[in-house]
Image (cartoon, rainbow, N blue to C red; front, side, top):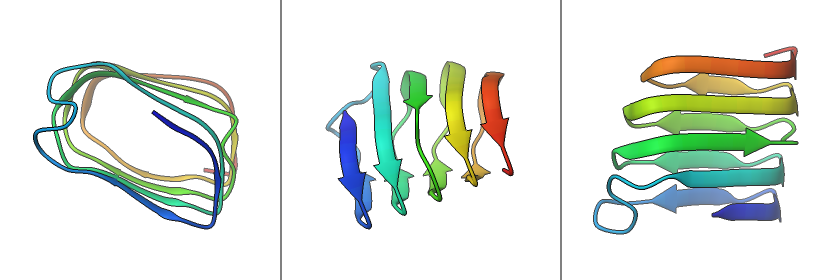
Length: 85
């Protein structure tokens, strides 16, 4: 989980979370690199972040986020209250 972080490069590499669900919440001005296959990703309340995400097996849920740049591959993309992204 990446939670409550500001101005950081956050990286997950192979072997740490392969095939599991992952959660990201309350990030500001961060670059997020998830270089492993994950089952599902939840992203909540993030602002001014860049996401580079390896393939997601099922879905990504993005809620209450602003000014995001997303590079992802997923079976299903769901969002609510996603602005200027």
